[in-house]
Amino acid sequence: MVKIVVTGFGKFGDIIDNPTTKLAELLKDDANVHEVHVLEVSAEGVRAALAPLWQDAADHADEPTVFLHMGVNGRSKQIDFEQFGYNLANFNIPDERGWVAKNETIIANEAASLETTLPLEKFIAHCTEQGCKVALSNDPGRYICNFTYFLSLAQTKARPNHHALFVHVPPFTVQPQEEQLHAIKTLVAVIQATL
Image (cartoon, rainbow, N blue to C red; front, side, top):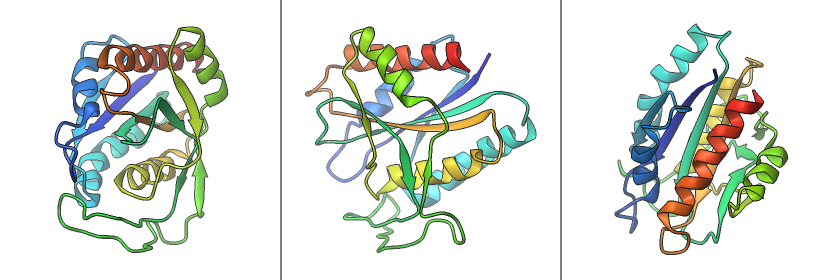
């Protein structure tokens, strides 16, 4: 069985009720999910919360593991599977601890971008067959979502059976909670079936 670690985010900016907080809570009871965490929307908060999870994964290098990160994109019309994370932090608004990154490198001496090693086209085809509104994206922004994704991709890239994926969801007013939960559960199930 694949160890799937799911993360959502809390509030930030004018997003008081982050849909990924609710989705993360609802995924706690999913048999395919190993553990769930809701992260503070800050660079320091993300590093502090994920460092022990990445270390645990490194200590169990033979165990198939996927870090599935979720964030909200207020402009999206569907759920987006992000193909790349970028080694650049450039914030339009402060994070929850007040940091405003301006064209900062996330990890020194690392590639400008990293790509997930998961078969996203296959996952999208499967999810679409199951009635989910999903799409491939190559732009996760340059805020905390991308910051989290790039760190996670960098942590998992050296181990062939460890993977990371970032999924952007729209607000529940655009795509209802039940539809989003169905899509994420479908994704989690296909990850289990594929790896």
